[in-house]
Image (cartoon, rainbow, N blue to C red):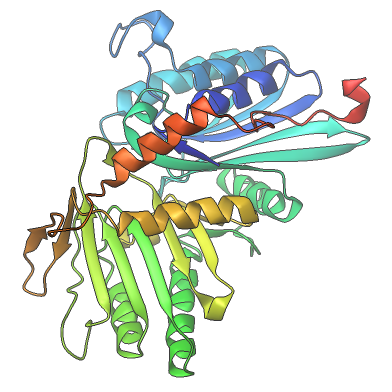
Length: 378
């Protein structure tokens, strides 16, 4: 897991660059929503040397003879011209460019590298809550995950088959995608917490989002609150759920954090009777995301990563400097440290943690991009 901008975006760039150069990599697939960089031949957005390193790596991979597929979203607001020109450049290099879907904006952020290893094909997958944009990664708060777990990689393969027209919608085990199943998965997870709370379990839902407006999700959260589920929501932007209403949402607390970096990641946690489940997603809980876009919802399974992500999510609800709390009359109240309480600012805390990790790096720094087989290491 990488947490931007507190950690470097360089490993993501290396993921693409090393895959492009590795002779054992046979294919690369990626969804491109906003990649940044200059528009080729125009000087808009920078000079030629500021080309998106991710796009440049995909271009080089195709020139190196690899099978490269890029799903380019032409309806990315404010980036339409940029994406069209990038797509044309990729096509000239031999990349198979899929121009999104006719009625759905492709907002999912994922990439997959397929590599020959020991007489089989190994798949390495990257998921993210944010874009493949090395510029915005410096001031957008986002989280990404690298994995080679077979079950997740299999689902990722199904996703790319659907996006590129090789297959119809397929059922998935680990991943959930919108508009096919993500909303139903969320409703199921919320209802499960409500049922467990009714059975005297300690139901709890925590989520960090950019926006919450979907009425079905809001009604489900109200039902869960009435069942006794404790619900903590960090919603940076618009929120049409009303917390603190007696008999309706008195178990729901909503905060918003606006600080130096743009809070952009989507994280959610479901207590599940003690067997907590943690997820990351590209989607906000809005009708447009859950019903009118291709979005991705993916689990976090590694225990060390889960522990770190859990701590991060909990810390957002400790902020008493940059957080505002939503009242039941629709107004927001800016929080400040009460007398005797230590100030806590989540972004400052994350910067401090990142500085300490940089000064005292782990003995095994997990910066590998493609795991080398024993044969290649020799």
